[in-house]
Length: 474
Image (cartoon, rainbow, N blue to C red; front, side):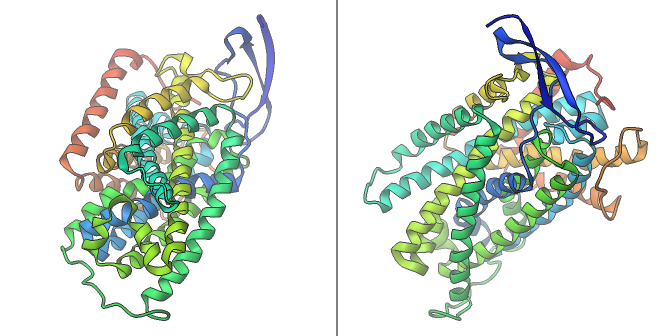
């Protein structure tokens, strides 16, 4: 196939209209020029599925043992702190997303509000932040896959954790190449089944924990290690709340973005925040914090066994498998969209934004997402992966809040959001302060890696992108 052909994609302009956008395509390269838009196929349920599905995986199935070991039962407070910070950022992000419903999320808003340097640092840091987060989810998936086999009587040990994680990471990348709608359908099904399992289990476990059924257990001291570990643990587990921002990275593919984006972002944080707090309460009621920490990344399997025997253990193993699968799948999708958006703005070579004509997906960006994800997954460093992801996202979240304040101050002609933050300017100011402050409580190694990535992205700006002017450009 050769020559040029006209392609029409349904896109939404900045004013919310839905004209047909015509673009020219070099078919022998299977690319679409930068005037085209990704097709809007995601509704509210798809947005909620991306947000909830991404957040449930780490927060409920990987972190309880690690968090309880660091902060005791007060780890529930750590998750609550994370939810508050996430909400303070989700509201400003919702306003910006309805004003600029484009793929790229936080990168797009910051580059238009604060300029090219901030946009380059955040855009490339978002790429790496999502890569670290996805690798973290995949390692968790590997642990639950091995535990699933063990529950079925097939003992393979931890030696297959990383090979399984890498194999499925490659599989999710290929799945996303075949179409956003296919990935979204998988996401919707996983999240629906997962929520059913969790609500049933946590309902029973909660009744048992408060002594309405079963035997009452002697309560453990709420914060045996003091207040500081609660905050440091909040910095660790904040990776659990990255899902709401991943909704914004696919804003360019959402139907009715003025309505669906705020509902998906805020709704996913509220739903998952409640589930996290209840989960820590149920888990620490089943075992003391020290015992729970000893179970490691799959501590929730033993919690399930405690409350419901082998059926409970299998339900949690299966739920953990679904949850980490959901997180990884949604994160691969979001990582590629971040790369796609940066490339379309010429901060990376334009070839990274090529779209596959057969499937309508950014296949080059998916390859640039999948490769680094597989490399980091192979390290198996769970806590480091989680905290570096949190560092890079918290940097972006703080700058999103600053970008909102800057855009409200300047009020450019094109800025007309369908949703406006209640309590402005207090809410975005608190969101910025809380995001930057949480970074200070991370492990030094995580901060060093995060700072190194930021310096590298600033260097890329000086080398490649300093002549690009993005502020106010739509």
